[in-house]
Image (cartoon, rainbow, N blue to C red):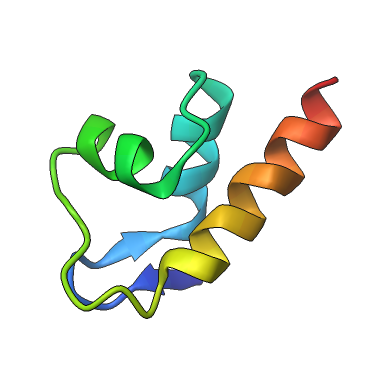
Length: 57
């Protein structure tokens, strides 16, 4: 699933960044070599990060 159209980021990439310890969309995107543009993806990205963090604990 595409999470961010502006950066063409996929869910698995955001989950990977979360598994690597990134806890905010801004930090996850930076780790992936980009930054958010329009911001519409931020709530979804945060939910994905929260989900990944919850399953890791």
